[in-house]
Length: 219
Image 1 (cartoon, rainbow, N blue to C red):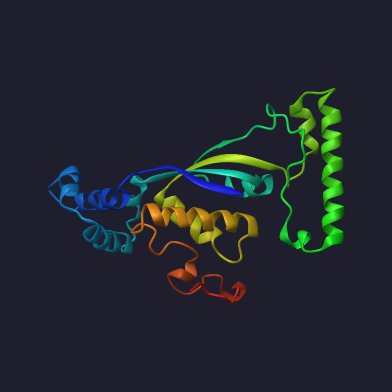
Image 2 (cartoon, rainbow, N blue to C red):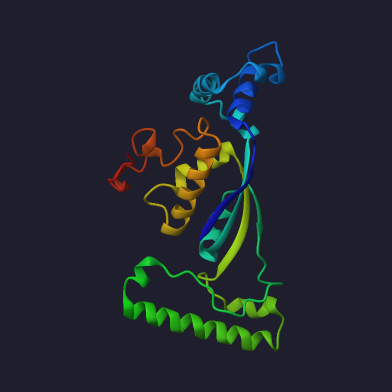
């Protein structure tokens, strides 16, 4: 799987800080932005977001390209509703060559891995045969959740922090957790203040999972 940050709000930390500060000032965000440096932005956002006013970080958005993820992953991903998605179509794209994700638990066992590979190749053989007689949109019905896909994802910073709190958790499914961890690294590079304490809930305090906790809090 490959995860790339295609575009994001430049200077997001300062912009969101200025927007937040403008709620308590007679001055506009544009004038406040000029006098806000990174240190001030961190202090302002820590106070405002710490009070629970998360709407100010909705002014920053981030667009990712995710390539080679499974359909199982994207079925989970699109449940995050405050986002925009553009996904490779199985109706119009010919998927003639077997391209699928193998879970680590299967890859670790040579016998299971070989059986899994044979099964996938059999599915794609049937897909190609069907696609010669019926539309691709009908042939695709036999393709598995393991099929790879490409998807473009745009979220604002508030939704991303919520997404990271759920999907960076050790109890999240392995593939979407891997994607979320990579996205978080990119976000921290782009906006270190907004995403300073982003990630699984145990980054910020006690685990909310109770008895279901993984028992391995993040460092």
